[in-house]
Structures are given as structure tokens and as C-alpha cells.
Length: 335
Image 1: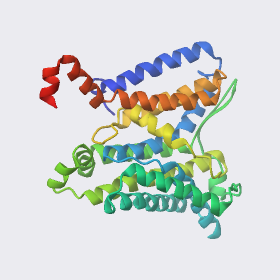
Image 2: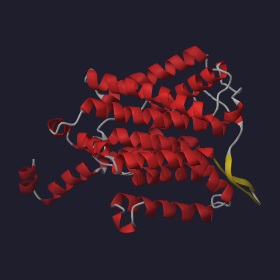
Image 3: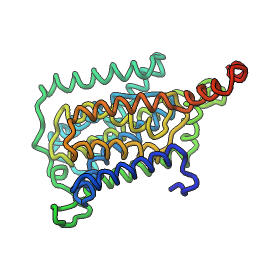
């Protein structure tokens, strides 16, 4: 974990904003600061944090992916359907199969982007519609309620009875900790993590250094696919059902959080701490609006505004603004 003095300005700003919002909600609502609400917030956010960890790797590598949430829905259906036909399976088989299907779907994006030189946003918009359309066509929009016993039996890691009900920490939180730890090791402790940063920062320079760009594409999108697969399985475990469109729309919520946390659209920059704090800010805002009785449509407007603000105040944009404020000569010298 980073020491306090190593926390960047973006992360420090997010911590301050989260603290102010939490204090406001604690003073204006009776339920925000209860153990039941805080644990519910943690359980719900666990799936999104796993999405965010995978998406951060893709953004650092210089790409973008908006198909991961729909891919997680496909993973849910395929994993449960296949295992039920094989007799039910267990957690080990479920996780292996979910990761495999997720990596395959992510690798499809990587193949289209790298081998056909198509822009990542175009490819993932296409696969987003492809995955979701096929899922709805094949399933007819019918939900699955008959889950294997190992998936439908709620795994509670910690439980405490309070005046407002039972406060529980469930299995998705443990899965989130494992996914975040592995992603941190990939990005900060392995040489291939540094190669992802190099490719995202300057693709041509990375190619001249001998970095295998094709392998990096498959690694980044495959990693996101695996994270999405695990997150999809955990969401099914938490919800105790599989609904085709349950994860539809999560991609923008997660993307906004990761960009808000300091990841640069364009690659080469981003931290796990920033992504988690960005997601915490979005989740707390959504939870607070619900507790205050504000329309859920307001949350969609806020997510859109967050994306616009985050892109507008990115490092590159601020750098150009600063150079212009310093004077036309300096601005011209740096162009």
C-alpha cells in the first residue's frame, strides 16, 4: 500500500471530496452511517471495483473497452448453463470457466484491434452490441433462477446483528481483494506491467524498444475479460439470480470512476488507488442520492457530467491551458 506522502494529488483530492460528501450524508440522513448501509455499499461496489481493476489495465495500455459489463452477463449465462448440464460443478470449476470465457471474449476485442488496426472504441461498441444482442436473442430475455447449490448458497465472511438489521460482508468482497492485489502485482511488480505503461505512453517508442505490442494487447484485454468473468460470477452469487440486462449500463459508471481517479484516456497513466477512490466517490454519490430520495435519473446526469469534467481537466488539457496563460511566446515554443 502506498505511504501517505506517495499519494498523488488526484487521490488526495478524491479523499477530501469523499470525506466531505460522507460528512454531509451523515448529517442529513439517518441511515448512511449505519453498519448495514456501509457493508451493503461495500458488497455492491465489489463487483464494480473488479471491473475497474481490469478496465484500468486497458486504459493504461492506451485502449478503451465498453463491452466488459455485457461480456460479464454472457459469462454468467454460459458458465451456469454449461455447469448445470455437467451436473452443477463447484466454485473451482465455476471460476476457471468464467475466467476462460472472459479471456476469450477479451481476446476477440484484442484481435480485432491489433490485427485489423481498428480503433478500440469502435471495436468495443460493435462487440457491446454483438454480445448483448446475441445474449438477448438466445435467452429470449429470460432470467435464470435455478442456480447450482454452490452459487446460490450465500457465503458470508462476516456478520453482525445491529438495530437496523444484519450487517454482512459477503464473498464478492474477498474476490475483489484478490483481483485488486493481482492487478497491483501485474502493474507495479512485473516487467510486463511496465511494458503496458510504455505502450500506452508512446506506442512507436515501445515498438522500437522491442516490446511485443500484440502480446500486450492480448494481455490487457484478456485481463479485463478475466476480471469481468469473475465479477459476473460474483454478481450472480450476490443477486442469487442471473438477469440478462442486470449489468447493462455499468460500463459508463465504471469508466467515469476510473477516469475520475486519474487514468488518462490515451494511455500511460493511472493508479489502482485512484480507480478505487473514483469508484467510491461515484458509489457514495449514488447511495446518497437514493437515501435523499433524489430521482435515479439524476445519477445518470451526474455520471455524464463526471466524464466531461474528468476529460476536460485531464493533465494534457490543463498543460495546454497553463501554457496559454503563461504567454503566446511560450505556447508557440512548446507547440
